[in-house]
Amino acid sequence: MIVMQDLLFSGVKPTGTLHLGNYIGALKKWTEIQHLYQCYFCIVDLHAITVPQDPAQLRKDTLDIAATYLAVGLDPKRCTLFIQSEVPEHAELAWILGCVAKMGEMERMTQFKDKSQKGGRERSGLGLFSYPALMAADILLYDTTIVPVGDDQTQHIELTRLLAKRFNDKFGSTFTLPEILLQKHGARIMSLTDPAKKMSKSDESKSGVIMLDDEADTIHHKISRAVTDSGSGVVYDLEKKPAVANLMTIYHHMTGKTMKEIETLYAGKGYGDFKTGLAEVVIEHLAPITKKLKEYREHPQELQNILDHGRDAAHHAAREKMKLVRDRVGLGRG
Ligand code: ATP
Ligand code: LTN
Image (cartoon, rainbow, N blue to C red; front, side, top):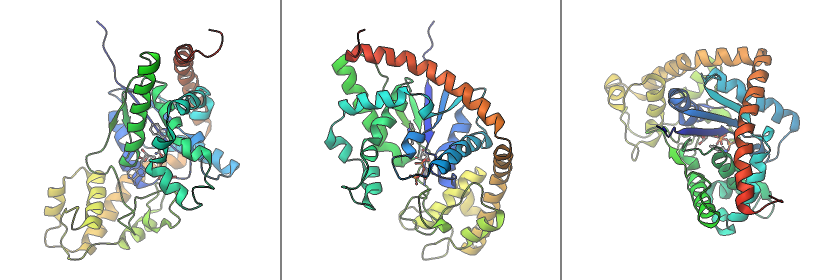
């Protein structure tokens, strides 16, 4: 009997230390479901160069994301952990998918609109524009069925499905259409200082962003200064109290408590008490992660071995898939 096994793929850009939004929206979920599926977790360094980068810093950040993957509890015996640029088939398939995609489709991507806003569209890199084709290549190379990401990536997954379907219709069945997997709460953690903006690595002000390696004092300080809503009760109401709802979502993920349980715990208490409690649970939850992160940063050799092994495993699978893709498209001499 053939059992269709789901395959999970996700990735993070090495553009700096990860924050609580990355953890809650993506990595925490990965650790919870890694035993259920065959998993590939990639460090997408080719995506990182779609915005200006310092070469030495990029290398450092790349290893640091690998350290973070291990520190949050991804098991390298179960998951393939690897660096995107070390498997050249990603870039090759991205080119082919770029020839399948339409300009209008790429232009509609909100991530491109956001990221090109600062320098202006005319001055934005072509790579930033075609970013989604590379992301589609990452996913489609491995016959991925599930992509666990934050909801800022929903549009990219929809485009990936569209490109896969168009390719299949034109050249014959080649790619599997993936599904997005979102957290029920926490698919979009907002900045502590601006609840209308997502918590982001590239945010210039770090006061609204809790980094996974922030010291306890810093976490206390950032949470104590977090913006709240008018009124005083700790009540989950996304429409009327978006800032408090965001803090409650963080609390929920740090403790496993439901929104109702959190409301009961803080009934009759004010925002000050809630923020103190929140800082404590965040510090407690992150402490073992921060400790392991520090250990992996100090002993990078183990990371190197894991990444070598991951590269070989991913390359093997990608090479096979690309043989089929080249054949379908009619590239080379056959
Ligand atoms: P950058 O600011 O450099 O664009 P980022 O903080 O958005 O970075 P990514 O590397 O793009 O981080 O994202 C890694 C993963 O974390 C993705 O799955 C993304 O959807 C998720 N993610 C990012 N920010 C948040 C957030 N604020 N809430 C929930 N998930 C998030
Ligand atoms: N675009 C994603 C990172 C990313 C990714 C992927 C996520 C690149 N390739 C493939 C899932 C699957 C981001 O900005 N967070």
